[in-house]
Image (cartoon, rainbow, N blue to C red; front, side, top):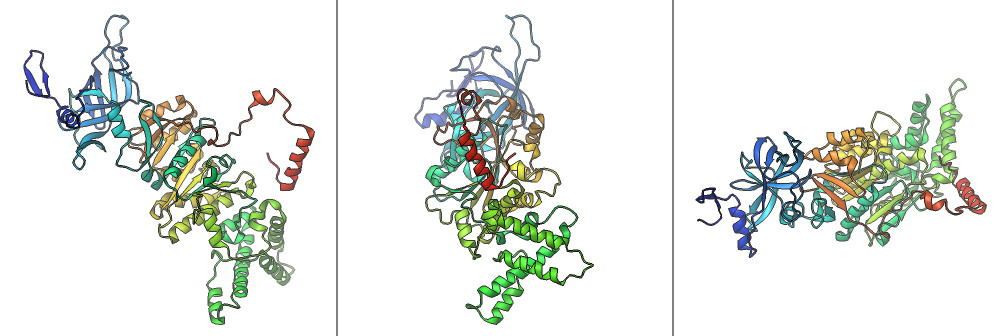
Length: 577
């Protein structure tokens, strides 16, 4: 009998086994050849789907030789030239019987995803997406062993990070392809308490462990990450944040300073003229000792309302006063007075001191950008911006400014400064719908989502309600980490944005336990069900849950502590709902 031949029922040699090339390759590498045990054979192929009939009784399970057949498990189908890899998407018995002793026919439905082929450069088996040689009727179906899982999910030739382990085999690491993950945006979704923050922290920690010169900015709206990254993080909050008013473009400035009633357009027109005049006055004053009169005149005339040039709010108020003095009695002064009052209120409010409270105006744009985006990193490649105490009425403006200047910096650096912008609770400030309230923020994030990858700027979105996130932003995320989702509406949105044969895996979303996820898209070799690594107590994001059972067993606050809280409350001027 020839080597690698399959014996026929009558004892005569049959045709060479389709596993022969793979078996010979293993033997050349010095490992005893072991042909995997077949569990089924193909009876139907349609496009990227196939159906196979089980060749063993249903329920006959040997954990070592025949692992349990379940949805999401990886199998391979041997063909004359390759091994086709697929995922089990459904298990059924078309003719169930009531007799416990009678065998039942079992069917498994498969989603085909790729192939195991011999890499001509390394002469080793490697995984390749897409199927060039489709399986046919009668082709054997085998369980993927640990070596196959490693070849598919942990490819050594591609830059990747380990974030957990496979659900199918906990001994096999779950790895994310870092370049595809970051270059094409990714999203982490899941209901409250399922471990989204821990999953994001795990991903970022693994990235930082191997990339000490990264540039990552985390918009932390719940103050969860101050201790998650240790000494590698630059911690910023409203007390040390410097985001001067002149960094705002006109749309953001209008959102912050004008009303939302019938006087909005009139106030916006006045504000536009006032800002241009204030910028010209500052430019003229700062250039007296350093430039000629002709050059000052040229710079001043080229200034627009969106030019990132410093100016004084006192000059804006002075212009408004000047115009008020020129108005006729018949003209309305309401827009002028309201705009002036709004500016004066913001300047005197301690909550807005990071934007309006500077007593002196200087051109600190380089210093501001350097600190926000870690240029140079100085051993702290990640910036965590605590936005939990930023007033809600201006939160979207702050996020809009940071997002927009990140994109502008990426454009002007011509892609020479790859950056990652992480947006927690993204549905809050980039909501679905046509509301004008969050228009600047939604536009800034949408622009990054659509064009950021061309300039090395990536988005990482975290949300518990993907159905409430702007569809344009969501559709641009090429990788999704989907954790437990309970509502049908959110599940439907994720299905609508699913590809790579992961649609059937999303049926598991309501059943996932904490720290489990379905990962699919460009950032993974194949859709996979994973469990994230445990970070340990010192590296976890802060848990803000109340812990009622522990807190209510003993006194947890006295009158003195309450008075201290009220004092801080009044000092900040913020009424928390």
